[in-house]
Amino acid sequence: MALFTDVGAVSLDDLLQFETSLVQVASSHAINVDRKISLALGAIGTKLLLWLLDVCASDPQFVNRRALGLSTVVLTPALQRWICFESLSRFYAEAYNVQLNTRFQGKWTEYQAECTRAEQMLFMSGVGIVYAALPRPMMPSVVAVAGSSPGQAMFVQTAWVDATGNEGALSPANGLVVPEDSGIAVSMAEKAANVPHAAVGWNLYLGSSAIDLTRQNLAPLPIGSSWQLPTSGIVDGPDPVDGQVPQFYIAMSKQIKRG
Image (cartoon, rainbow, N blue to C red; front, side, top):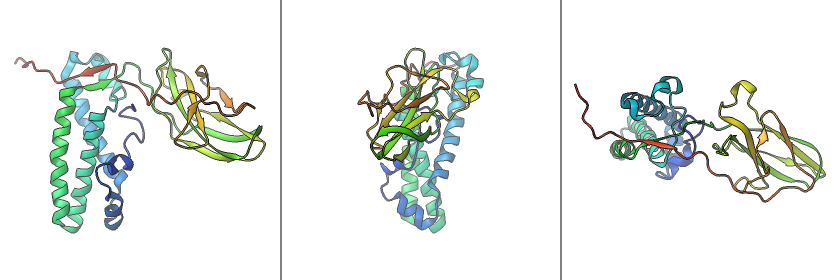
């Protein structure tokens, strides 16, 4: 799973699972969907942080929570659902205010209610956290170099790895059409100062299709290193693990606070 703070963790594609006509409505009413997602993330992020600070010792990272912020919060399905409904509520609120169409008002009201339910379900089921965050990397650097690969398209994604083998969310895909008798060299785009504290290396996923990438390295590649396609070509390695899994869930306490 991605982390709450990962760039692009929630996108238009996620909203289209609930509203297939979103693109058409956005185009005809000049509504910026990414802006609505950003506003939803900001509003929910504020609620989440205040809630985590309020639960005190129930959060195993409470002592450092202000410094950590939401960097260790995992984007669980429950949290993603809340963000999607908050984004859709804001989207249809603007659509209604632009045209005063009662159909959009109905959608706005519907998603406001869904948003409230999703928020309650998240806090009841628990906010997932990890002890050592591995943020989604930037798009990797991919360049054509001398080699022996046949001419073809190649797509690359990367992910940070920690000392125990945990892997973060995949980077955005980068790709290029490799000329005949060529190869590729791949490196992480992050400068040394931006490498996550928990990362000890990185994994590389490669494929001739953007939706069918497999890991090319047996062991994590050293930080700061570059990987080059071997003469044997693409390896049919393991599939990506889809990011970090929560190591702890902070659920709403049923105890009544004193005072």
